[in-house]
Length: 148
Image (cartoon, rainbow, N blue to C red; front, side, top):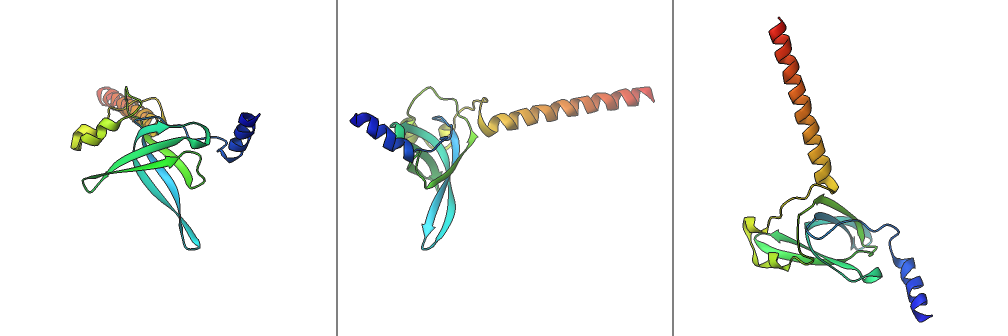
């Protein structure tokens, strides 16, 4: 009875469709910032290194390097302060938590890319279509040049 009541209360404060992203993804987190009576959106971008919790208590940690110093922020997924989460690229990882990135610096922090979700997939398909169109155009140009 008490458990059902708790889930009912939690459901009301959860987002209808939470954003889909995984550990290793590079994301832009759009955070609403209140300054006096004004509200603005600040973007925090970095790599998702951890997810934890469930339901309304689900959190994720985003890490980025600012002026050579590692900065991590922990966000609740269902917070009304989170306006949007945009996946920029998907990293190929074999761990649930990427805390090992804390000890690394420079190029060692980079993750291999996984081409099955997000903006990276769209970019990869567009580049492939562009290459195909360029190849066809060069074949047509060669055929016309040979025919004249």
